[in-house]
Length: 149
Image 1: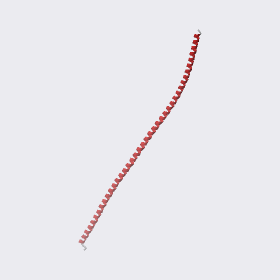
Image 2: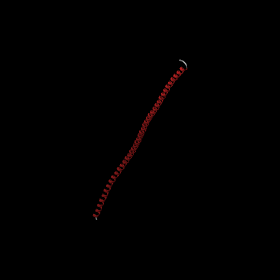
Image 3: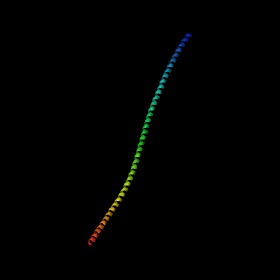
Image 4: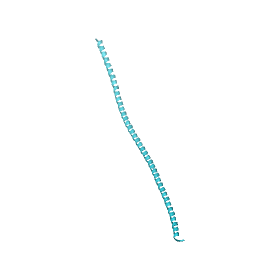
């Protein structure tokens, strides 16, 4: 059979086949679009996860940096305090040395004064002996004068 009816049937068959093919293509396109949306969504989620991981890593790095800065400041403060203590001890050692020198000088002065005192006591004893001798001499002279009268 060839004729207009056959052509019409063939046209309908071809149309249905084209429609089915187009439907299949549309479905495949829709499925591809859905898969593409899912893929984009996975990429966005992955990017967010990576961003969060990077943020967490950066936060961890910052925390470590802040802790190391705090440790450095603490060590620097300890070193400063130690240096101040050492300077204070050195000043005290110098003052102690100065006090020891003053004490030695005072001991020397005391020894000199003690020597002078001993010399003065010896001189005083000699003077007392001379006074005693003069008194004895005077007493004997007075007794001789009175006895001779």
